[in-house]
Length: 96
Image 1 (cartoon, rainbow, N blue to C red):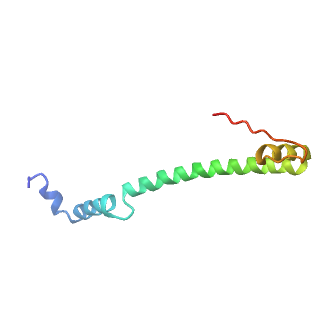
Image 2: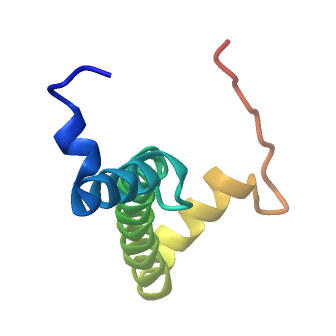
Image 3: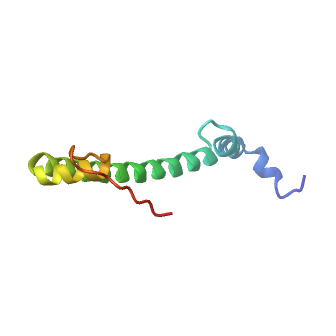
């Protein structure tokens, strides 16, 4: 080794600190790479949570409207579930 690094490796605290740092960066179960992956996954899940919370609010609003307005309920049933009155015929047009 070079003479420049010999005092560094003779110092117990420097070697111990360096070893601990290498262990925490590369070898530990919570190393930097794992922590980065976990934090990016957490951000992704938080974004999904926000998306689904907005969807829940929309569905609750639609549900409230459907339970209070009979005309809207009939329109919803006709469009979404293709329900009809006995004297009616339904034609479904699909855009390709």
